[in-house]
Length: 343
Ligand code: CP3
Image 1: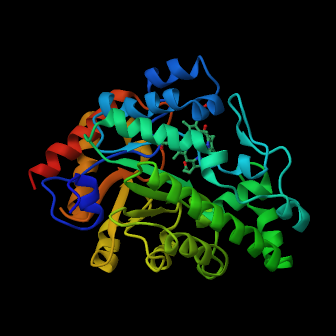
Image 2 (image 1 turned 30 degrees about the horizontal axis):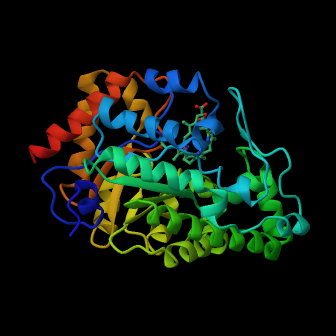
């Protein structure tokens, strides 16, 4: 029986209070993160286990969250597969030479993470050591569809027209790419679990741009393939979609333990519909952290009331914004701890 609050909540077991963490909690809203980042570029931080572990643990000590997510990005996995990745100052991630056709898929290799992504295993092992049992360590990956959008568009897409072009003209080619990514994500997450990750989250951030029917056709089967292939004994699997309100019934068929909801979704309604089979994660609007302490507490209370005392991991509905004051993040975490313990 797992004893960490977050693991118990993920398996819908009784908890003394609701556990809380934040997507992108190791990030630019923290001056301590910016100080490390001033000395190293983003990819160097990802690839230097001591730096990655340092920033991963910052929110544990500074904000008081109930989980550590190791510092990296969903896109670093694609680089050793054969896609050059650059993070431009202020501009976000970019693949200068994206996948443009079937022959490009050939040049993508499913690699052994212990070779090409050993810095991830080293960072996870270091995090586990430094956390020293206080909270669980989370691993993560992009889901195949979201990774494919970056591999094909080369950057964060708007309408994802290139991906949809493939979908409508060459669905088999798109499926070949997604299947390859699914195999890589599976080995990558199993490697993270073997390296110390105690729960894993699949980010399918951009799947919300798909209709329900298209999600069922192009995204869900490959996410399901990943989840089916995980060595998940005691390791809960969390799935997240941004703008995925219309896909929640589909998410519930993937075999995950936890459904992570964005802020537009009525968490109480999902609790009624899926709460007997899934734990829920979320779903405060990241912008609520611009509010006063009193307003933040109100919003926290509203979500706690709707989600109930068990089977809930409190989180934001998307990553924390870089211009949020750290004391507001702390106020949210404190509010979750105090208000959920009062029942
Ligand atoms: O949650 C955490 O604290 C762990 C680390 C983490 C990062 N990115 C660090 C990061 C995780 C889990 C991610 C996931 C990620 N990355 C997603 C899925 C979740 C989501 O937010 O939708 C996506 C789509 C990406 C791709 C990505 N990485 C984008 C679009 C950007 C640029 C936009 C931005 O926020 O700057 C990044 C950069 C990035 N990833 C930063 C961090 C801390 C900022 C880089 C910097 O310090 O300059």
